[in-house]
Image 1 (tube, helix red, strand yellow):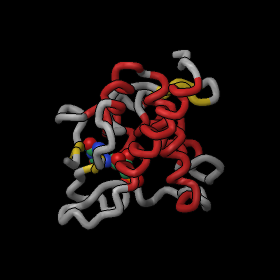
Image 2 (cartoon, protein in one colour; image 1 turned 60 degrees about the vertical axis):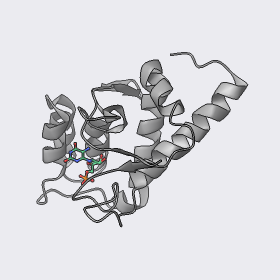
Image 3 (cartoon, rainbow, N blue to C red; image 1 turned 90 degrees about the horizontal axis):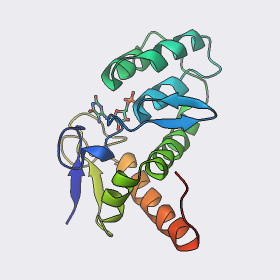
Image 4 (tube, rainbow, N blue to C red; image 1 turned 90 degrees about the vertical axis):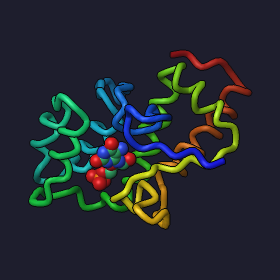
Length: 156
Ligand SMILES: Nc1c(N[C@@H]2O[C@H](COP(=O)(O)O)[C@@H](O)[C@H]2O)[nH]c(=O)[nH]c1=O
């Protein structure tokens, strides 16, 4: 049975990038994957000054609002790198937090779908025809963690 998730306070909300499960990346702590992801849009761009503000945003909603501002200049390679940026952050999240790693592993081989009514890239969109890249990333992270666990013990 397909597992749908979207808002952090709904069932399987820990799969949302807006859930408060922080990650360390290259020595910097980010309060949510969403903070990290939105900030990466501006690495090396002329609008990189926004990065500390995204980092300091009190909520992921605020971080997303800053990152989604259409008048700012995104890094040129963003469309090429964004899926890999997201995958690395999501992998880090589930390697860092044992409780939600268990939730992810317990989903077995179920399909995971970000049930966003508006996002046809990361989610399935309003009519379920979206590409669901976040769900696909979670499934591939689930597989990678299973492989890692079969080889070694994860050190948090
Ligand atoms: N979960 C969730 C959303 N979905 C998230 O939004 C991000 C895409 O942002 P962008 O590339 O800027 O359009 C990505 O992390 C996706 O999972 N959006 C929301 O407004 N609220 C939410 O609770």
